[in-house]
Length: 296
Ligand code: A3P
Picture 1 (tube, protein in one colour):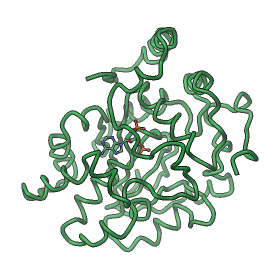
Picture 2: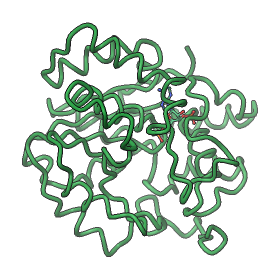
Picture 3: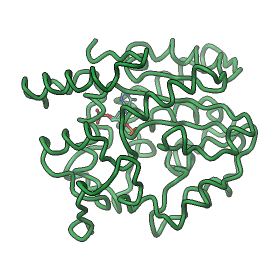
Picture 4: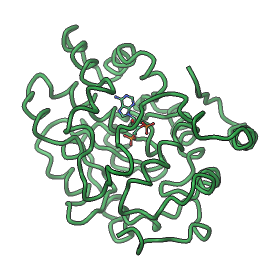
């Protein structure tokens, strides 16, 4: 599949989604006209920022007590539709979301803030945004693209890193994505902006904050159980969360739940790459108050 999908990224602008076979132009109107429900919960992220982690955590929060059996039988990607996904032979993300029997619906998206379908804003839906530091994010993305069978080959690490800095990625620039959602959060009480690094540092504390945002008060033992279930090793051993879709992923190349660490970028960046990245980063992020931790 992959060999036929090679794309010349140098001709692609930062917001040109047509490079992704996952997001087809002919599905775009359907995504933009998606009808949200007021109790929908949106998980918004740049790819590889901890999306699956947050989707699973939210799924447990809402459904673990009432439908524990689904934890063992329904893969997380079937419980939490990926809104803009088009990937034959699977139903589209919007069709999946429309047919979800549960309430609330938890819906995942990688769309930059300006492309979130307007109905989510009109319905005042709650949105959980998870951001991850750029260096670990790009490393995780590189390994994912190596194992991912449908999107174009990532090329070597050097060129992948340059493309990431240039924002020539399927969902556009990381810098625009994290800053765009951050700016929106300053004026919207409906966005809860979280950091991957905080989740690693203290999942229990982050779960508490999330519950306050969502207006939920689970029992102490329920929270403990959720924190246990979402630990990296537990999720890795769980076939419902360590994505098992071998139609699109090649597990002989890499793992979906790969390392789950803060600071793995140090094993990939050369000293020169790091210096150049930092310089470029300073320029691109000079107008935002958004701060990340690259190590802990
Ligand atoms: P790594 O490749 O650095 O290991 P997404 O779900 O957005 O695709 O993000 C995937 C990244 O989140 C992967 O990062 C994966 O290992 C990490 N991740 C998923 N679940 C995690 C958990 N419970 N704890 C820590 N990291 C987790």
